[in-house]
Length: 273
Image (cartoon, rainbow, N blue to C red; front, top):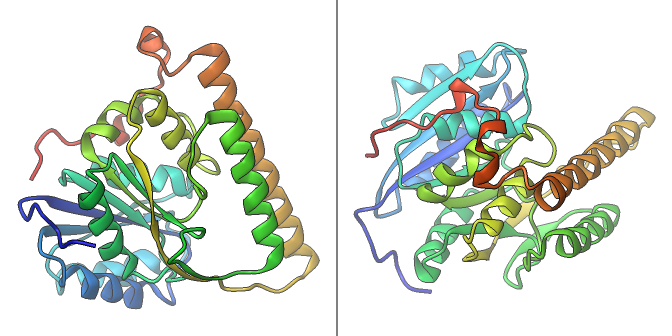
């Protein structure tokens, strides 16, 4: 894999964070240590998805201590998809990345995704558990669910990538400027809505990159099982809703622009760094 070819790029990294008060400081420092090693300018934008604990306060203390870090957020929890879009709207980069907080994903994957982005001249790079070079540790139940879901995605949308749900992705800004105003999902199927709509609009240079994932196994209490089952159900409902809007209603097409639901808080900044 070659080194980054275009050092004039500017990278914005969005980190959605919810109930991460115990780890957010460590997470920010870990990501910054990776970003300091890349050869392009960058900014790190942490979006606290609801002021429900001390995540915002603890992250905010680092803003004055670490260069190129911004901490933003809002009072009520609105879902990961909304948080990512909120951060993207405040970004300045011509390349925009998103990575989950919590460090189940090794942040070194940022460098690998950036290399792939430049190598393939990609529209979108997707961190993938199924890339041959990926190192993953998650249970067999999730493996089966992931496999079934990706088969559904292939059948419904024709996306020929093996994994869409990993919380590490890179986007070309012009893709997001074209796609985001059309989107509706703010929680469970944000990733697949963005990818499916981008693909339908002709942004087909979508490739996978390897990741290192160490899933934090939770207990098998009735409550955890119930929450997991509900999440899976909600993802499926949202996914089929995306299919219905895309293939049946043609909601995302330019002809239906008047029906798109704009949120002023999610508008992109005009100036790009």
